[in-house]
Length: 281
Image (cartoon, rainbow, N blue to C red; front, side, top):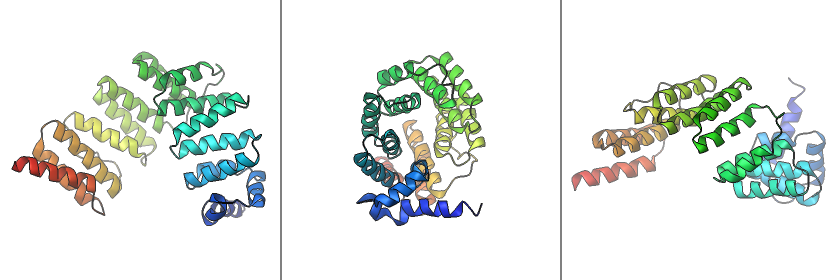
């Protein structure tokens, strides 16, 4: 374990302590050390997403023939939620004949983020049958959801679950699929399964609360959450209660959201003030 420490310190320095060199004019020697040590993937997996973007933008500009740098840039754009730019770079990889099936798979996920469903379907059609991974079947499931082909979606989610040792995100997406069908009780169970594998997955906590709220259950789910997560979830439950014309309940939830956050929770406070005004009028 101690042997790996200098390597991690190098990565941390590249990501944090040397942000000036990464974001403006990277030291070629530092870039080569990172590249030679095979640490580009760690730049993508840890640290600030925009710093990774800056690094790979510079690296790709300096060595445009390097598919690994262009691929790293596409992944970095995706991590930074810069999906149109990620889509463009994946397209460049494809045009240069450097795209792999995994690149097409990741590009399809970006297309889904952009609601470009036809593009995502076309990219999935290019995937080889031998690419039998959890992520490939998760994509298939999401595309089936978009078509409202629920049997195909369930089959793909089940296959994705079998192929991964960390199925939290699979169950979370499957729960969203169940909600889209109106199967709120099944959705609730899916989100609980997701949290059983990863209790830190906020989207599953939030989705669980929403599924419960839509069933008229407005108590916070009994799952670990930070004050910020608690405030956000209470706020979202308040929105559901307000839409169900449960004004007093909504006011209580918004007030609880304000109290839960270590700082002032503006979204809930604003909605609470709006409800107070409407009641007075």
